[in-house]
Length: 123
Image (cartoon, rainbow, N blue to C red; front, side, top):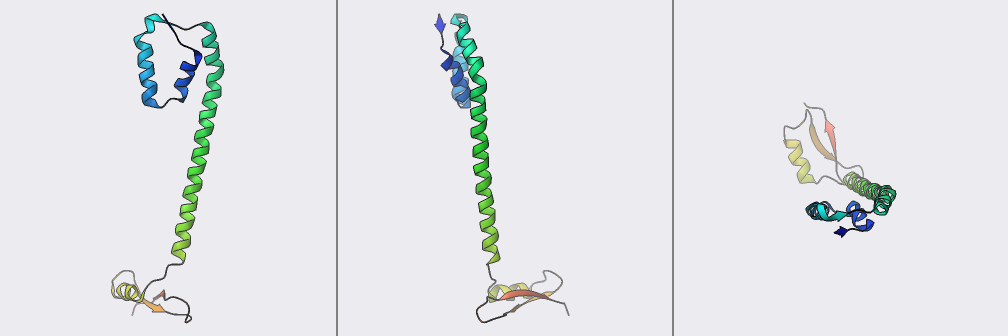
């Protein structure tokens, strides 16, 4: 006869999928010799919701951290792209291409600023 403590069953809630499957298969293999006392059933039922809630809370916290990381990355990309400037060689390449309806020419508003692209009407 095999008698498992409630910790064995409650551990199933916390176990990753593969080890959980292995333990369930082992319990299935000895089910004819497995005895589950009433107290174990009570403890598992009482604590399973607490464990499930804790696992869900951990999942939500991890999802929040992931969302914050994504937001920081998006903010960083937006901030970086705002400060990018186009070099003269890139400007000439864009101006000579057939992209868009107008041409692009570099202009410089002050000696310290980087060249910017401004759309000019097609001729």
